[in-house]
Amino acid sequence: MIKIPPLASFRPRLLQDIRGYTIERFARDAGAGATVGIVALPLAMAFAIASGLKPEAGLWTAIIGGFIIATLGGTSVQIGGPAGAFIVIVYGIVERYGVANLLIATASAGVLLFLLGLFRLGTLVRYVPVSVVIGFTNGIAVLIALSQLRDLFGLDIAKMPADFFNQILTLGQHMGGLNIFALGLGLVCIGGLFLWPRLWAVDSQFRRQLDQIDTVSALRATSRLPAPVVALVTLTLVSWYFKLPVETIGTRFGGIPQGPPPFALPDFSWETAKLLVSPTLTIALLGAIESLLCARVADQLSDTPKHDPNQELMAQGIANAVVPFFGGMPATGTIARTVTNIRSGATSPVAGVVHAATLAAVVLIAAPMAQHIPLAVLAGVLLFVAWNMGEWREFGRLKHFTNHYRLMMVSTFLATVIFDLTVAVELGLVMACVLFVRRQSAIFSADKVGQTDHSLRYTLYGSLFFGAAAKMDPIVAEVERAEEGVHVVLDASRLIALDTTGLDALEQLHKAIEKRGGQLSMSGLNPQPLSLIERSGFAAHLSDGPTPANPAADR
Image 1 (cartoon, rainbow, N blue to C red):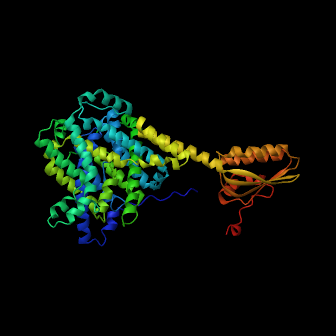
Image 2 (image 1 turned 45 degrees about the horizontal axis):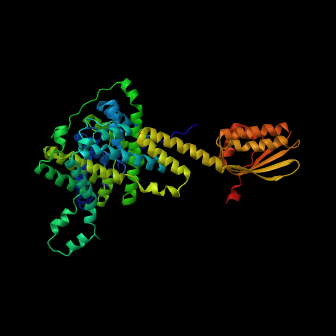
Image 3 (image 1 turned 90 degrees about the vertical axis):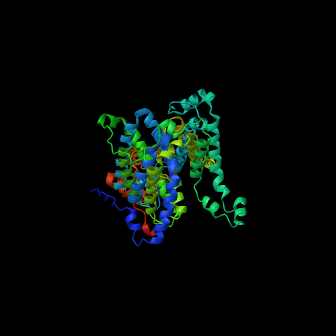
């Protein structure tokens, strides 16, 4: 009888972390949450705009999704919200299916994520090879950077195409309309984002000089401000004061509504849902990978208890099932904001709740001021995000790895850039399976260790499965040339796995031996091969029955 594993328990980490909660911990969580909330402000708007949505879609995804992930998630310090990895996916879905269908796909992906966690499938995400993850992450970073060149150059392009080559063609056709003011703002933004943390580093010359001055408390306080916020505020003020002729949030979107979004049900039909299977699976897979990868990073950087992958997926599922009804976009764990949260002193999910509350307060109070933000500045922020998102050093390290690793990583990268993430992940996983089969089949061997007039002895190494079954053919050929009454002995003490195709190869060997009037023996069988041989009835064909491995000898 098949034993069905129990469903995962719904136990949010918040319930565990608030036991023995103190005022001191709340103060740390409140400070960290407020800091991350300020950091998330420009990123949430930039991610939404780059995805082909209005800026408020990103803001309310960070608020609502971030709140749900913090309160119901399986990690103590992870921050949820819109992520750069989704930009390319969301833009492609909006371009092909429209915003309404994006909301349906996101909600459906939320249901799928919840079921993955409920049925304890969170650990399956770890089966995605790191070479595939690096490949599509770098590919997404390239596409994010490419999508921001329109706003960086201030080009008058009504709508950018979704595919790589058409984007390059469209940019090239409109380069004559380059806006030097937009380019200047974007480049200053990028330069400032790179220089700001280095300027205030403990070992920088600028910091050492300030430490020698007594009246620098205000400057030291300024050093704690996140670089994206400093760039957003200062460059927006410059653009507004000098009335620079650049496109802003106000000129393109009419500003950000000063109030919460209304609850609305997207138009749903089963016919539409059938068309959205691929986008739904893509959102769910990427959301699961990003959130659990972020949770593992949080485990490494903090002293909090290890994350619960199944609870995290259930929380991500609920968040993604809810935010579409408020006009939101896909939400997941965000590595950059989570790291900021940890370094700011967060100890529990309360920091994530404060992060959402801080964002909500800013949006509800200061929304009208956002209309002056230049899109070129947001493009600079996203280009900086894309640079930090990519693991570019891995390309230089490829020479140290096998051809299999290189092929998977480069193929996934190119497929992400040229086609889309769905094709890239499918290709990467198929190649990983094929190359794994090839590697395992290369490991298997059937070595001849002895021969007399009437006996042949072989030792089996590795896994005898469908990818290695052909390696038994030389033994069959030798048996066919052997004398009548040949006795073949297979030492299976080093045979670690056997599948039905491998079993069929043993049956073909037995038939060849039977034709010569001989016998087949197998000794030292490990538990898995022994179990299959006994269940299949093949044990009856062995002359002395299957001989299991000797546990005492193994010890």
